[in-house]
Image (cartoon, rainbow over all chains, first blue to last red; front, side):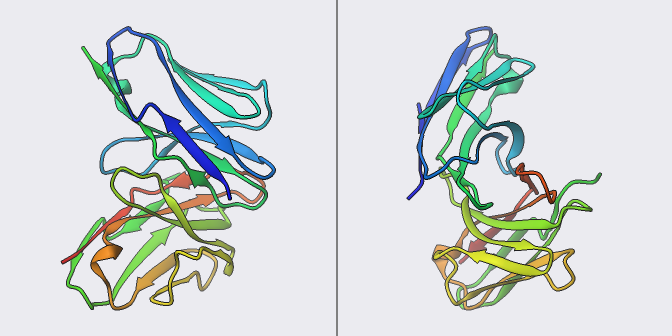
Length: 109
Length: 113
């Protein structure tokens, strides 16, 4: 069965203090790995899709990378508006997504 | 592009009552998904449609749950004889025919008292 584990559960950062979130996974035949951002009381917002080991994608202060067993979401010089829960999901062959529990990031000014 | 919309945004019901939620996907998205999310957890897959055909259902979807997408556009999720354990955020997502990215709506928060 597909398994996604995210760490840490919570991360408190000072504004400008860069850090990384981890997503480790086991899946039978990875079609894609997805990162989403979720604000309290709202639906997940799509950030990135990674398809193969070695792939990297960037968006503003966020950079996602992928290996055969895990993915990292790097947050460079975060701002308070980057505070959210970041969700990782894997997609095996088929279309459903299997999500991790998320990492809640709080950035203090 | 107005995004995925869901209605209602919040629903409070008493145990044993039936509830129905509606999801309108992004236009031209032929795939539609339902997920359920409880506090502190990631979304869990419930079911998925391609056009009007329901192609996959999770074991989480008990007999009290039914989903439809009658004309391949909007979808409804009905829960019969609600239980307190059904309290959760119900999320709908949609995707284009040849894309894997799923775009989520704002969710319907269900509280069963």
